[in-house]
Length: 545
Image 1 (tube, rainbow, N blue to C red):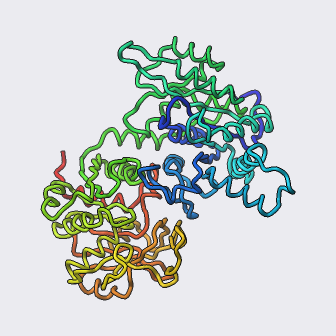
Image 2: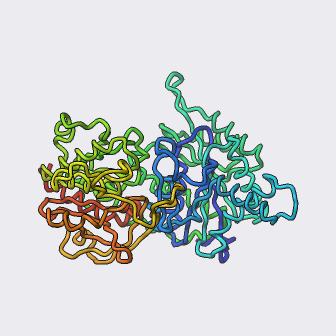
């Protein structure tokens, strides 16, 4: 039945805030809400408000903030934008990522130009107005029925205050039925007392109320099932309806979360609060099929992920999720084992990489762990183990081949050794002399032309592709003939600059290095073909269970 208050919708806004503790999964909840609304036929986009003063995470160490995700238009963003894309199967852009650094940079630039006509520039209204402008930008373009905005950090943090103030102002300015607030909090289980505790949630909501915002929906993260008594208690003390208290219990995979939220009618609750139609039934058949295959693999395959940030799982988040997608496509479970590249030596590399069906060398910057990655690439090449090198991983494969096949013992990347006599990886001439970080970076999507009859062409099934980049250094084409004569072929080129984008060893079972980042483009419904091909090749080394 259609909601009696329904009407042709203008853009609606859903804000997702967090309380009690960080890392509760606001990005996954935001993505799940987006997926459910999208499944009902609504056009949805999601943006992230990050309170840190960095302009973007591009200069942040992955140990500080996890993976830096790159959009098609070249924005370096928070890893949650990766979740948005994987769930919604739609690209994001620079407009989907807002940081305090960007906001203050714009406001200060306007002040220097005299745009404020001599007024005193303050957090309210100038900073909040700039945040509002950016929040409303996506909705103003008219491409989305619903804009979901995730606010980073935790309610009560000093740096989050302007963002919560923006929510308060927008709710008033846009009017009833235009804005909904979802607050994600923790209900901890105290084993000593043997019970769940709601007091942290009550305090978190009280803090939000003190900042002028009443949440419409509470999503409670928990390790244990919530009783009806707990739901009623939380609803009573936090001024929300009982059916607006939603349980988010721990699950084995993040891809179950939309289905759990659907079971609790979170989408229906939000649609009612936003005066949107309820008669559009959600179509999640493809999603259910994906989750079913994920839980019921027919085979197992083991991949070594060799990198320098392996202690932090979020540092390679998109890569790990790409293996999940590729595993489902191949109807297998992919066990990804992180290997610290700095720990690999000539003496232990064989033992540490023994038993893996595939080896991947991860992207990264800098010299630490580089030699270990060289050893991993060599091990894969010499033992005919399927290999995938991404970005620096491709460059590692090139340096290793130059040293051990071409006999260029001192071959290197000029990123590591500027004076190497064999700069097989180097800056392009137009990049040299630029010192500002990011100034020499190739960021965002670039075209690539594939050679037919290659592993890459077999994976993609077409000649022209476009992939996202995040790097400075390139394959040095001066050495291309030497590599190709010795058995490493360039099989993908940028059609405009002739830069090498993909290298392969045709005589090998499956040995591919790519200069771009395929992991950024892999989604639940469209797993990336290179990951699919790599996992398929690795499966050929296994025995069916």
